[in-house]
Amino acid sequence: MVYLIVLPIVFVYTLIVWTAVLVVYNLLFEPFDFGALSTFAWKSAILVSIASLVITFVPFGIYASLLVWLIGLMLIFKKDPWECRVLVILIWGAYFLVNFAITFLIDGMLRQA
Image (cartoon, rainbow, N blue to C red; front, side, top):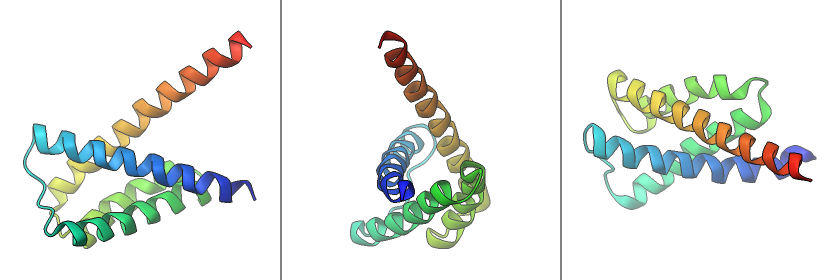
């Protein structure tokens, strides 16, 4: 039951990280070929949904999501392994930083209460 509450939160969180990583990737490395915006939107929704399901329901899902991101980027977006590797590292790094910040903020709020 709790997973049904967590899943939409993880989806939105993953979507925000995915968008931020694409912006950083475009600024630092090379332009990400989106194709048509409508096609990119549904492809992104599929990839983020699968990653969110894995993160939520699979034990140690954050680690399993690395394979989901890598394989998903190669299959769905037709990217080469080098681009996928850089994107996966950026995604995982962003997850780590955001999780650290959220944990730090929640811990600080709980200590004040």
